[in-house]
Amino acid sequence: MTDERDTAVIVAVEGIDGSGKGTQAKRLAEAMTAGGVNVELMSFPRYGETFFGRRVGDFLNGRFGELSELDPFLVSLLYSGDRYESREVILEKCRSAELVIFDRYVPSNIAHQTAKVALENRQELREWIEHIEYEIFRLPRPDRVILLDTPVDVSQELIDRKEKRTYTDQAKDLQESNVAYMQKVRDAYKSLADQNDCWSLINVVDDGGLRSLGAIAADVFSIAQSVLGRPVQQVT
Ligand SMILES: Nc1ncnc2c1ncn2[C@@H]1O[C@H](COP(=O)(O)OP(=O)(O)OP(=O)(O)O)[C@@H](O)[C@H]1O
Ligand SMILES: Cc1cn([C@H]2C[C@H](O)[C@@H](COP(=O)(O)O)O2)c(=O)[nH]c1=O
Image (tube, rainbow, N blue to C red):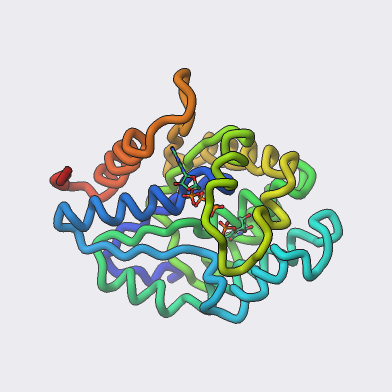
C-alpha cells in the first residue's frame, strides 16, 4: 500500500514562479471554507519549518553553486526531504479535512528538475522522483493538479509584485532570475498537463492580457468542486 490518505480530496495548484499559485490556492481555500467545506491549505517548500526546507532556501540563494553546476537528480532530494519531514503533518491534514490544497507539491519537483535535463532523460528523472516521493516516502498522490499556465514575461512581472520572502533578500532567487530556465519549466509543465488526465490547465493570460484574479479563481473553484464531487455554494 502506497497511499495512506483517508478521505480528503487533494488538489495541487501548480505553475511557474509568479503564476499566482499562492494567491489562487488561498482564494480557493477561503471560497471552499465559506461554502462549508472543511479545508486544509499547505505550501511547499516549508522554508522555515523543516531542516530540508532551510536547505532549499540555501540552494535558492546560491549556497551550493549555480543552477548549471548542480545535478537535478540530487537537487530533487532537498525538496523530497522537505515533504518527507512534513509527512505526518500532511497525513494528519488528509485525515481531518475534506479538501487538502497544496500550493506546490510533487509536480513542482517533476517539472522543475526534468526541465534541467535532456529530453531523453526526463522520463527516468520523473520516475525517480515519483518512486522516491510516492513509493519510498509514501506521500499521498494528488487527485487533481491545476496548472496556472503563464507566459514567462508575465510571470516575471508578477514576481516583481511579490512581497519580501523569508528565505531570500533577493528580488528574484536562483531559479526565478533565469528566464531561459523558466521557459523550459513552463514547457515541462504543459507537457505534463498534456500527458496526464488528472491535470487541468487554466490560462492566466487571454487575448485581453492578464486575466483578473477573480476570473481565474472562478475556474479554479469550478475544477476543485468537480473533483470534490458535490456542489459547493459560492458565497460572494
Ligand atoms: N491574475 C493576476 N492579476 C493580478 N495580479 C496577480 C495575478 N496573479 C498573481 N498576481 C500577483 O502577482 C504576485 C505573485 O503572485 P503569487 O505570489 O500568488 O505567485 P506564485 O505563483 O505563488 O509565486 P511563487 O511561485 O514565486 O511563490 C502577487 O502580488 C499577486 O497578487
Ligand atoms: C516545491 C518545489 C519547488 N521547486 C522550485 C520551484 C521554485 O523555483 C522554488 C520555490 O520557490 P517559491 O517561490 O517558494 O515557490 O523551488 C522545486 O524545484 N521542487 C519542488 O518540489
